Image 1 (cartoon, rainbow, N blue to C red):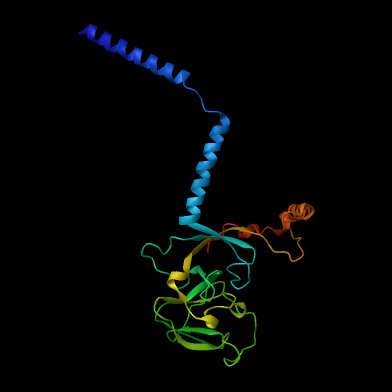
Image 2: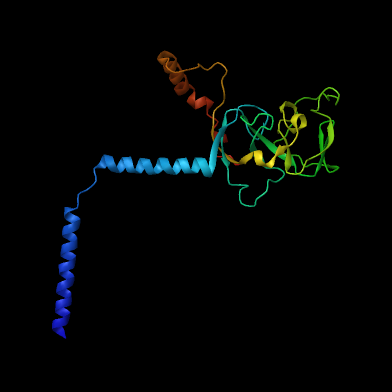
Length: 241
């Protein structure tokens, strides 16, 4: 019996010795190859996330102030409404503009399919009740525009078509939205906004740069470096929406 144990221990030692030899003489990957493989994996993961999960957008107008500002960069969850979830009143959504699907817009849902919308002297009513005012919604113009001149301040009543959503900008007096071109079909909705990942205060006097003009590129780079401390909206970065 003792001899059997000795034989087993001997075989185990031989196996461990052979395994160490294999590991010792196995060729190691060059460092550059490890970096390349890691980079490729990261790139593929980023592409998959970009295509199927999230998209990044830049805000280019003031129509959503004070929830979003021109120069904000946001992430949008493309899966928010893909698996049974429905858009809800109050959601900030990115969608294809119904009159030109090549353009992407961002607005807030204020009414859903089948609901009745009316605006009287800037006050929004949904199904005959005063709608809840979003936290960042605002009116900046005290003038009341009559309905025969514009739908901005007086609109409706309008019944939202099934499968569509009525959207408005938070900056109510400076937004082109469903008051002017109707509801947004559900199939046009690209996703729900998540948070601001970067914010840069626009400067109309900033230098332009177009490839391949190297001197302009140097000017633009110098301007960006010099303006970095004052033009980054640090308090906006990471703001949830």
